[in-house]
Length: 229
Ligand SMILES: [Zn+2]
Image 1 (cartoon, protein in one colour):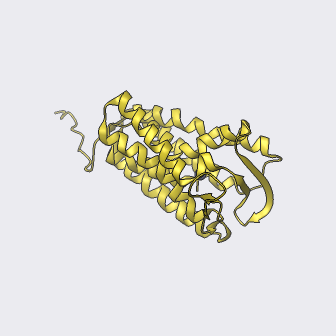
Image 2 (cartoon, helix red, strand yellow):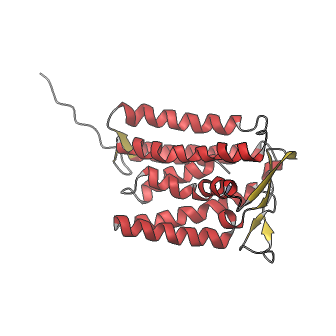
Image 3 (cartoon, protein in one colour):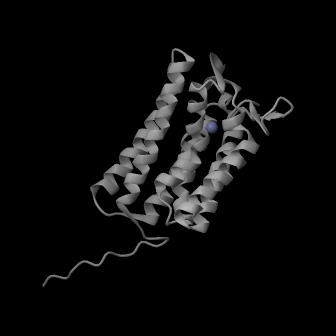
């Protein structure tokens, strides 16, 4: 899954309003932010197999540290804990931890059975393989994404143009990235890993947008305009 993770991060703002969208995005996409680093370090492995699945040519041969359930929980506890130490915001820390773990559960419907429960050869691997069922994944991803964006856009209010245009540019760039990622696969695994590092860009970008928007909660507060007579 790709867009769905960002959708969940957007929606989480309603549950943890004092957490920045940057932090929430960092947490929801953490497993995919860690993955290219572990690939480049040679700790995890992937193979590009064109035609492997209708919507993904990636054969995730070995990625137990970024994408097993137990490790997702470990990362979630660590990130939630560090967040709490830094911000002293309890519900924010819980949301951060749960977002990290949510990534694994959102990946399960899309992937082939390549997601381990724990690191080690004895672990069963699961995945429902929806990436073979185009256009179903598109539908699921866009529904979660649109729902998340709409929750965030209604719960916050742009303070200036960065807050409004910056948000819509971000939303559009992610959607375009998702739609175009179905084109020709990268030439080799190294290029793939370097390209995958690009997900890090969306963390400061989300933080920047969020700094230019105010949280207004469930209801839109009517903006009082000065009456001129
Ligand atoms: Zn993932």
